Amino acid sequence: MSASTRTVLAACIAAGALTAHAQNRAPAAQYWVDLSTASMSIPGMPDGGGMGAGLLGALTGGNPAAAMGGMGGSGKSLDAELHVRARPAGVEGTHAIPSGMNMGPSLLLMPYRPQPAGHGSTHSEQRSDTPEKPKGRILMYWGCGDSIAAGQPRILDFAKQNPAEYAQFFSSHAGTSKGVQNRAGNALWPNERDTKRVPDNASLQGEHAVSGEGVPPGLKFSVGQEYDFLPRASMTAKGQPRDGVQLSWPSMQHARAYFLQAQGAASGPDGAQDMILWSSSEKPENGWALMGYQSPAQVARLLQQKIVLQPSVTNCTIPKGIFDKAEGAMVNMIAYGPELNVSHPPRPAKAPADWQPEWTARVRIKSTGMTMLGMADGADAQRGAGNTGGMGGAGVNGGTAEPQESVLPSLPGVPNPVRMLKGLFGG
Image (tube, rainbow, N blue to C red; front, top):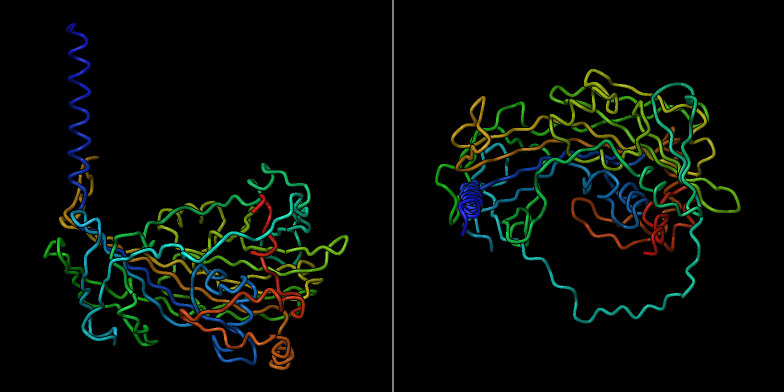
């Protein structure tokens, strides 16, 4: 073996050792907590009740949570996830919580076990060798103001089936923010053994401690007022779509930015259905991905790009003429809260590239709201309630709702993105 070969081999071995060392130095435990406050405001209806949940379920093919970034209904919710490096199969853990949560002394964390596909399920559905060509369009608008800005709408025609055009249309300025993701083996709350609800008066402020096999005994952190639940996004919509809709909401003390997205449906060319999208962004943005958590760094970037609204903003007008032909429409809102990051030992101001703490904890916070457009008073809401097709029993905060596609024709104007996008790529 030549000297040069030995040198290269030694370098490779050293590099591999450094990589393994870095992997072994990963935090012994990582803990994520996601806080969400949600509100559904429909004139003439109690917040989050009956018809509201049913309409939201229809809008998303039986999945109300999808319409508002996983809000799952009105009220406060908490999701937690624990990863223990030495226990990849998961451990049973405990999260000791402050008395202000009003949920008892602790939350039980249980390992997540993905359910295997049902043995009785089959894929015997007959499919045509020549699937029907998708029809319909998506019309995308953006920006707050009294009138539609030049160059709008941006139109996606399903019939063209252009993958490059699809990719561009559905691209987003949204970033990624690591938090609760229900990873296999990690311990989660809530779970099948602990399903208690988060009360409306719950507060995260106080001392927290996480324990379990393989969890460092010092995994404790304190939550101050800044990192508590955000208030409800009590959004109001005044005016009819043909005249422009004025949206307003109370200012939230700890919100870092706001974003709004509306969607509706109207009859398009050749009898196909058009889906209409609008967002409060000053640049083209479909908005779906932005209805979830965004990191502080990402929010700062979005503010700079004028994709999201400054925290001092408390109103926005949907320009007239966007939803004037829509048979129904709704608007979603999200307030991005701060993010608490704790570690032991604390992260140095100028941490080296190979710095690794013993444990980390992260708390993400958001508040979401939804209201219907064009419902000026309770009478409008009551007229809409007569067309719910039996959807009023849809549950909130984890309730189940079967897809109601069969009743959609009797719900004029209820857009269903899931159904409209089926078959775009042969699915």
